[in-house]
Length: 438
Image 1 (cartoon, rainbow, N blue to C red):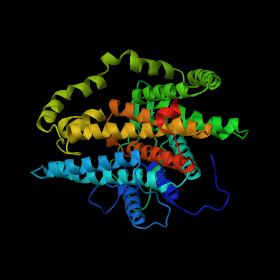
Image 2: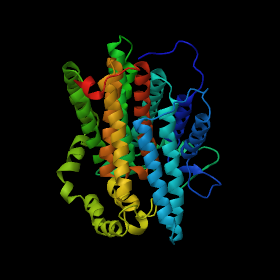
Image 3: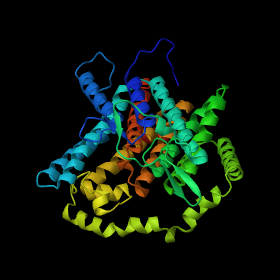
Image 4: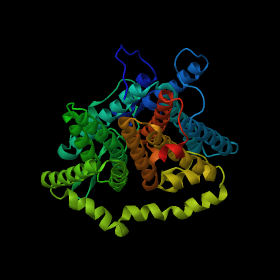
């Protein structure tokens, strides 16, 4: 990948890194004091990115991309569907708690949409996108390390990450229990979210580790980062995380060379052996998550609420009852983002959400088809793997209800669009995709 040798001024990538720092390092339970809605600093930063993006679109001298892009179009369609649902839900009476939920959700949703658009249009070239994704990977590694301290030592570092001007929305700790083990959440809102966030980081840590190794550079820090992130996903004791890592690994194995596949499989086996020796009983607990899945009360609890969800879908099948109005404490948890979207945003919202996921993966797949650079192609593969983890996670828990996972989802979609823009800028005359594949 090409880089810049001169001093780099702050740009869109820099601002998104600030957003990621707020998203991943500030505990998810901390929100801004003095604001009636429970708004996190990351959401406020996302809205600020939207304002900056809009101002940059009014001029032609700041290097912000303009024009059509599949990921950008998907983000705009998602924004339109959210506005349509909000208007439909609030045109008539809503109970105060549901109206407050709808108001807060529309603000949070647009904060994350703005981040995706800012990444797609504001990251100018491959070097800046590379810097952004490296920063994201390192920050996920720090989150995983915090989670591992919670798991191994019952030491919750997030209690000491108090930021002036912020208040906690809950007094709950970040450590739950499953079997005889502690379930960490790191700086995220729940162990399931923590596990999925770590799973998202695995493909990128692997990419940078192999990339450094093949370039003859010191790769030890990236291998360590990969081990910490993978361990974080495992100790979350989350089915969503384990299934996500398996799917992401399958995507990587399909795209990697035969030699790298063998190395990766041996490394994965060694990783599991070390975990079994260091943490006795952990692998057995993970196996029991799937072996006894039919008798797991948490699974039964999720399916018990499907009947009431079906009734809501029948009443509001096009635009849904309103995003943020199906309160878990009032109607019961759904723990399935696709079902939750169908209830709250209707069939239109569900179609747009699926299109958003597919648009991000297709943009990265397009890069793999047209780029001659093996490093760029491998980075695109990592983006596909990470977004496949997101798409699967949306089926196993209510992913977009959690701020950290939501923020990373939109960063990944925007990064796929930015990567496609950058590759097209380097190769202005490109064949159609079917010719490039052939």
